[in-house]
Length: 514
Image 1 (cartoon, rainbow, N blue to C red):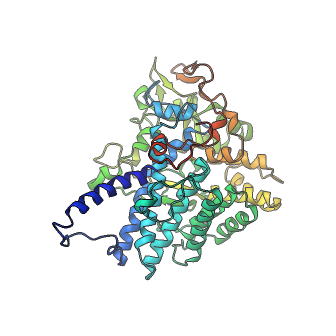
Image 2 (cartoon, helix red, strand yellow):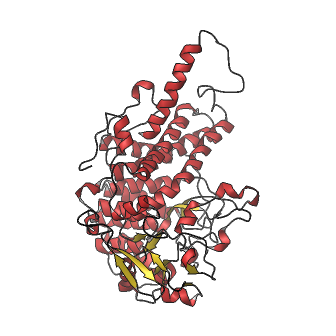
Image 3 (cartoon, one colour):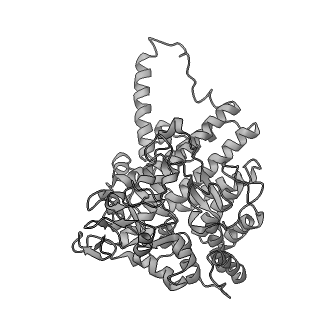
C-alpha cells in the first residue's frame, strides 16, 4: 500500500544513514524519544489517539466525494467540463487504476490503520486512559477495514506495525479481514472504557462511543449477511436510549446550528475559533455548496462555493412518488429552482449550472453563518460520520432478514413518522431500500449499499450524457463520453487497487477487469 511503501522508503533511508554512521557516532540523541520509550504515560496515550481523530477529519472529504460520486444520486458539477477531471471520472465510471483520487482514499484508510497499529503496539494496557486509547484505536481500525473490504474486496491485512521484511503484503483473505473487524469491535465494546452519552440529549461528548462501535459491528454483520448477529447488536443500540431521531426542523439537522444533536452517533468537532481560523479551512464546504459564481444568492446560503455535487432528477422523482411534491422531508432535503427563486436566489441571466438538473441540496447546504471570522471558507460545522437513522435502517434490514418483520416495520415507521408520512402496516426489502435512499441521500452510504445489494448495474448508462441547467429553467444535455466509455461495467463491482501500489508491491493481485 502507498502508506506502507511511503513508510518503507523513509525507513530504508534511515537504516542506510544509521548503518553508515553508527561506528562513528554512538551517542543518545537528546530531545527525542523512540516509539519503544514513548506513549508510556496517560498524556502520551492521549496524544497517540488524538492523531487518529485528526486523521479521521482529514479523510472525511475523501469519504464524502468518493462514495457520493460513485452513487446514483448525484451529478458531478463544478464550473464546467474539466473543472475537476478526476471527480468527473468517478461519477461517470471512466476512471482507471492510475486514478490519483482513488489512490489517496486507499492511502487514507491505511493511514488510519497505521496510526491504530502504533497505538496498539506501543500504548500500555494499564490505566483507564490507556485502555480507552487502545479500544478507540481498534474501532478506528475496524472502520477503515469495513470500507476497504466493502470497496476493494481483498485489501492486505495489516494488524501490526510492519518490519522491513513484511512491507510487501499480499491480498487479504476476506474471512480473515472480517474476523479482524469483528474481533476489534467486539473487544472494544467489551472493554468497558469507551465513552457513553448520559442520554439522547447529551451533546457534550465528542469521543467515539460504545454505541458507535456497536453500530459499526452491526454494519459489518449486515455487510456479511450475518443477519441474526446484526439484528441483536443494532437492537442493543436502539434499546440503549442514548440516541433519538432529531425532531427539530429536518433541514437544519446537519448544519452548524445543530451540532452533536440527539441523532448524531459519531461526529468530529470543529471550533469557532477566529484565532486559528485556517486550521478549519474547509475544501469540503467550498466544493459542496451551490455554484456561487453563476448565481445571485441573497439568502442564508453561502455564495462563494463551487457546486461539485448536485442531486439528480431520479432522486427527486422518487421523493415525489413517495411523498408528493409538497412532502415535508423532500422540501427539507432539496429545493426545485422555483423554490430557490422564492428565496431570492437565481441563476444569472445567460449562465448555466454544469452537472445540474435544477435540484439544489438543502439538508446538506452550506450556510454563510458557518464560517469563522478571519478565514475564507473556514467552517466550524462538524463532520458527521453516522447518525441514528442509519442505525435504524441497518437494523430494519437485519430484522427483516431474520424474519422479525414487526420490528423491521417498527424501525422504518419511526423514520417515516419523523418524515410526516403514514406508517406502513408491514415492510418489504424494497421499502427499506427506498427509505434508506431517501433518508440518507447525500450522506455517502448509498454506493456501498448498491454494491452489496447487487443493483449497481442500474448505472450502466451513467455519465454518457451530462446535464446543464440554464437560467431559463431548462436542462441541456451534452455527450462527452462516446461509445461505451462511460457507465458501470462488470469490473466496477470492486474498485481497482491503485496502480502505484501494484507497481511497488508485486504481491498484490489486481482486481478482475482492471
